[in-house]
Image 1 (tube, one colour):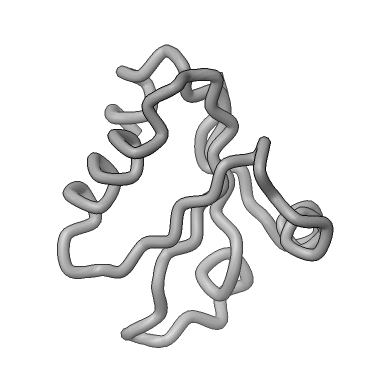
Image 2 (cartoon, helix red, strand yellow):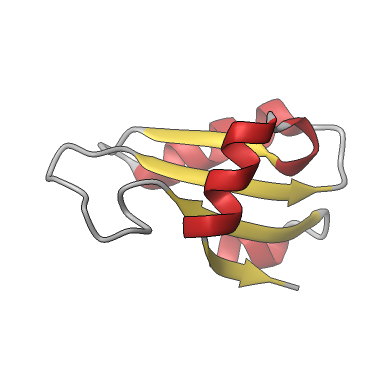
Length: 83
């Protein structure tokens, strides 16, 4: 959470997918949706990849979601950080 707190342009982080639904297996990836007001999305993705280490992480940004993913996140997502 410290990383999210340190970036003033990250407004909210939502965990979704199998980890949010408690159906994850040992090799399941981490799915995150980030409400981000900045312009350095690539840096955010690289930083998160560095933080999660051996786990695979898919990072999506709220402003670029298709309808299907948006509905899935609204239905199953868990807010893990919010300013």
